[in-house]
Image (cartoon, rainbow, N blue to C red; front, side):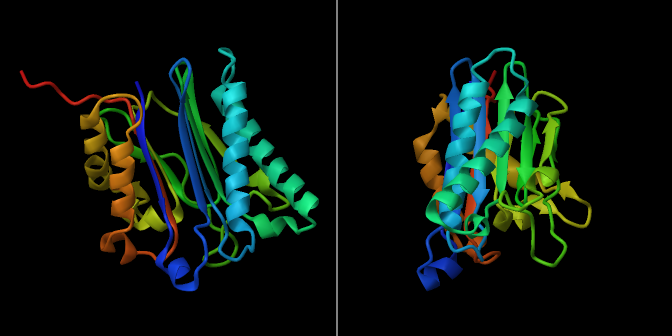
Length: 254
C-alpha cells in the first residue's frame, strides 16, 4: 500500500520580502489503491501566483479523483484532462476577478499510479522521478526551459496545451518523487542528464522503513525540516516543495 510524505517551505528570498510561499502540493491515496500527486510552482513574477498554484492543485486533484474512479479510465488521458481542467479553473478565476491570466501563472506536475498502470504530466520546470524497487531511478521529463534564460512554461500561457508532456511509466514504479525546480540541483546531474541516485536512496529510506499507508505525518514534518536546512538554503533561495511516495516495505532480517 502506498504511503507518502509531503512538504513545502517558503524560500529565503520570500522570507526577506514578506512574500508568501507560491508553491502548493497535494497527495492522496484513493479507494482501490490509486495514488495521485500534484505540485504547482507559482511564477515569482506573477502577482497572484500562490492563488494560481492553489487553484491548479485543487482543480487537478479533484478531477483525477472523479475520472480515476472509473476502473476503465486511462491514467494518461485522465492526467491530461486534469491539467486542462486546472487551466480552465485558473482562466475562469482570472475572468471573475478581472485580472490578466498571467497574474496567476503556475507550473504543474501530476502523477497517477493505478492498479492498471500510471503515468505523469508536466508543464514547466521541476521534475518527476520514479524508482522500480532496486532497479534504479529515472526522470519522466527533463525540466522545461523557455526561450530565454531562467524562464519556463506555465498553465496560463496561450500555448500551454502544446507544452504539456504526458507519458506512461515504462514499468511498475514502487517509488515516486515530485519536486519543484529549487531541488533540481540535488536531484539531477545536468551534464549527463541523469538522476542523482544517492539523493533518492537516502530520502526514501525512512519512508520505506515506516510502514503503514497514506500520509506519514512525522515524516512530512521531518521533510519540512530538511527543506528548511542550510543544505537546501545554500543551494536555492526559492520556495521548495517535495512529495515522496513509496509502496516498498523494509526487508525483514532472516
